[in-house]
Length: 121
Ligand code: AMP
Image (cartoon, rainbow, N blue to C red; front, side, top):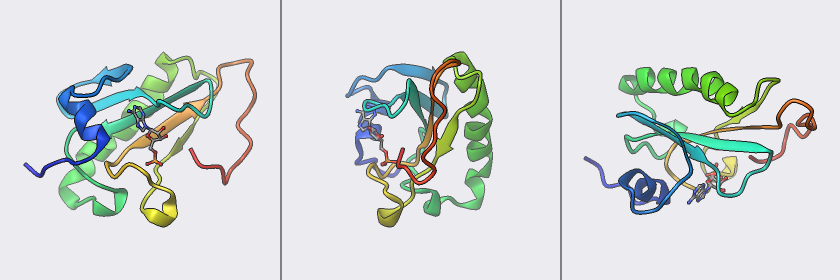
């Protein structure tokens, strides 16, 4: 297995704690340490894939599973009136942690709508 040098690799291994949202054998989801909205969590594959640009054909099932989890976990976390997803990719995409992750964030019903479309998750 490719070594995973990122902080998310340490979270997967249990070396660094996280506020877990979901886990199975392929996927982990946990709350972002620096939330940009009332609810902000990340969905990551346990397989080390640095960026969306590194995805290969064999990863499409895994990616589909991660995307399918988005509305399920969002609803479980109280985002029943909408949410935003983001995948920052590469240096100019603003990616800071080089382990593929889907940001899911938003405010609960009654909260402010998300307005900035260019804002970084
Ligand atoms: P990105 O810029 O898309 O790579 O986003 C990386 C995200 O990881 C940021 O929103 C950080 O707040 C978040 N993050 C970094 N370290 C941790 C951590 N230990 N636990 C949870 N989230 C983290």
